[in-house]
Image (cartoon, rainbow, N blue to C red; front, side):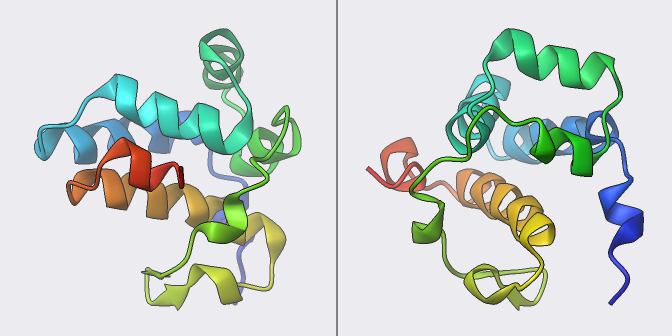
Amino acid sequence: MDNTRIFKTPFASVYPFYIQKAEKKGRTKEEVETLIFWLTGYDKQTLQQQIDRNSDFETFFAQAPQMNPNVSQITGVICGYRVEEIEDKLMQKIRYLDKLVDELAKGKTMEKILRK
């Protein structure tokens, strides 16, 4: 599978869809940002810098301050693939984020989503 297209997609072009998906289900932009902060180590300012720079997913994850050490606890199916079995590490990180937003939209509590 050729993943280069998604890797080169600007994070800023997908970010509004994460927000939209959550808000349609009664969740908030702040909750989506909390997921992103938890996963990547970004904070509000550094996340906004990535958005302003129009960083692609490859750069977004390469420059992430620190991936959460509990990411291995994110399991399940997203887009037809088990996230824990995705071999390409960058694609796996993208799907981790997709999975977290999906769990938020499905009504899971933040405590469960953040694997506390």
